[in-house]
Every structure is written in structure tokens, then in C-alpha cells.
Length: 326
Image (cartoon, rainbow, N blue to C red; front, side, top):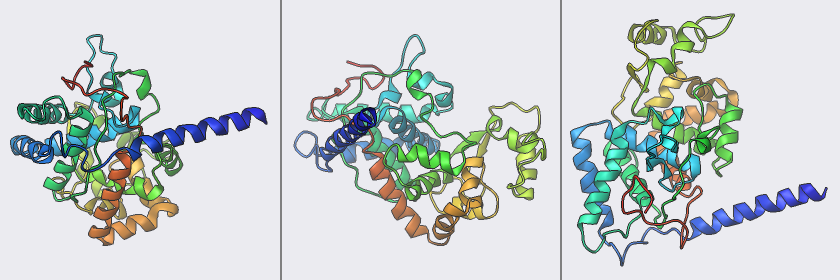
């Protein structure tokens, strides 16, 4: 009994610590130190986006992976000469380089302003750059809370069991998101980020060719979609071949993702389960029928995601170089 009480107390203390940390975040954090931080980052991100569309999904995915692994502390940006940082974990090797490059370019733009040099954390730059790419592709423009500090630690081990897998069921998804204070609705809204970007053939081949002893093809997949996927990903194709997450409007941030789920066109099991499981289907149907409601829910969930495990005050540091600790 005493052990249970002690464990409960630890959980409560951890929650209180995380609440007090994100309570220090505020939208006008840099109003005196770097008042034009948002416009500096916006123009740098826009320039990068004009060079390649991949900037958008890559930055959004980088932010999600960063927040889920050690909290939103830019530890995913740290490089290690021994290749044992979080970004070197197999689950992160598919993070596109354009996401990292976006933060590096935005950081350079901020530091070019003498008033702002080394005043803005890489974690905040990533959070603002993410909001910009969402808005640039047609998604919501939401307020970003600022004041995060950068973490100094990045390990491969910290990634283990920290990111949702493409084969997850609803219980696994809900458990992982709840760990970060995110509800089922938040999880379904954040899954809508799969309206942008691409994955690779090796991530879906099991659903197409070797799903289960009973059925080679995942029965929840739309038959026509199976044919399309098999054309793009034949059996012995290079596993790194890219395929769009959203087969209908892959370059637009919209609610097509949910409409695709209604038709059995979710690329991953963890996408399609949101529709096949009756507990989440109503939310999918609601977002499919109401683009504004989806965007509003996504904005709300992104603000909550941006508070996960943040370092504030005198914790962490403001990195001079986003790829290595000071």
C-alpha cells in the first residue's frame, strides 16, 4: 500500500512539474529580446518552402518526433559523431533532412539580427517553423507559446517505445498519447498531419503481401487502393521508394485524410484503425464532414503538444548551434 501511495505521489509531482514548466510559456516571450522573431522565421521558412515542398511535412514530422521523445526541447536536432543520438534511431532515420535544414536556416535568420542573436531557443524556432509550414500548406494559423529551452541530452535509448508504430491499434495509440496529456480527439486530429508528406514501400509491404495467415492483403484496405499501392510498391521494389500518405491531395493541408479513411484508404494500420474502431469512427466522420472543425481541433492539439516535457527558466540552454550542445 505504501509503495502504491509513493508511486502515486511521484506521478502527481511529475505532472505538477510539467504543468509549472508549460505555465511559464507565453506567446509574447520574446517581445523585449527579439520582437520580430516570428517574421524572421516566417520569411526564412517561406524561402525554404519555395525551394522544396518537402519542407512542410518534414518540419511537421520533426516537431512531433522531438516532442514525443524527450519533450519539445530540440534534442532531436542534436548530432553525435558516434551516431548514438536520438536522430540515429531506426524510427528517426526516415526523418527528411529538409526538416532539420529548415530549423538551421531559420536559426541563421534569427541570429543575423543583432538584437536576437543567441536569444531564441532552437526548440522555439522549431515550434514556430512548424506553425508556418502548416499555415503555408492551407492549415490553421495558431498562436505558438514560447519560452522553451534546449535540452543537452540526446540518446538512441530514449526513442525506444516513444513513437507510435504504423501497426498500432486504438488502445496503443490512446495510451501513448495520454502519456503526454493528449486525448483521443487530440490524437485523431494530430493523425490528420498525414494529409501531407510521404512514407516508403517498406512501411506498407506487409499490408499488401503478407498481412496474416488468413489474408495476404489487409482486408480493411480499399481494393482499388491495393492495386495502386502494388503498382507503386511491387514485391521486390527498392524499400525506400516514396509514396504519398494522402493519395488525393498530398500537398494540401485539409481533411481529405479522414475522407480517405472512410473509403479504406489509410496508408497505415494505425491510420485505418481510427475508422474501423467504433470508438473513434464518429470523430473521423465529423472531421471528414467539417474541414473547419478538423483545423480547429488540430490547432488545439498542436498547442497542447508544444507543452510536452518543456524545459523553461534556468533549465536547459539556448544553443548557439542547433546541432550540438553549447
